Image (cartoon, rainbow, N blue to C red; front, top):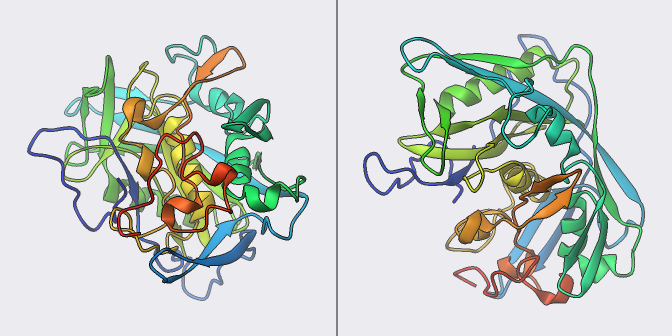
Length: 355
């Protein structure tokens, strides 16, 4: 379930935990200071549209190139930014650091090193949609190929590739969480403990970070913030990630939880949010669906068993990407996607409510 952070979600009663993902409404440009122009650069993007099943005209912008006309690789620079959460004596007395080599199930890897080795960025796994082989590559590249298979089956060289880019002056973001902003709790979805923080307070920190790094992180770069065993909150717990835009600068955030079977396990939140960023980078691709006002490809499957994830074995790790919805779910023609399906593995077979 995605929601605008200005509107509190339904947490099913006081003290109840609910696994959700968020969408912060896009804002105006970051405040770079009086007389300071916004940084140059534009996210590589394309525009398209369709007439949905109700006869309504839908338009959208997505990251990458148009699969109907591109038959080559499109590269988007991506900078991974670790977030270190520090909780004091009054709210948990713990530090959650994704740069440290102490996570369960990853042996000697840190969360950040594991993220780079995951199918989000390593193009070594072969992804299929039923009998259709969408290609060996990064997960979201392969998903997008399945999503627009009607074009990609002809334009077989079409790819959208996220290039992890190291930028010298881009350092980890450290957040000291006050007792009014969050605390350390038992993980509601499994063993172990997690930290929590208010999503609105957190997003303000993201904006400050992007503003102070405007010279290094420009709108043509996708900054992806990553935390370890953290859930965001808004009136209740637990939000695994979100994406948004400030002016022309898009960005995303995801947590990496190391408890087996828990919400947001390893790359599941990452796959959800990066997939939704790719298909709706500015959070304004409006669709005619009663369950979702914008084109959020992860939300329709997050309530399935295991939070909609499936297993991919790579680099000696069992990864858990989340399955994603394809264009016919939102009312587009079945000729667009692989098999005409509404999701990559056919785990949902219906169109969205309202279509």
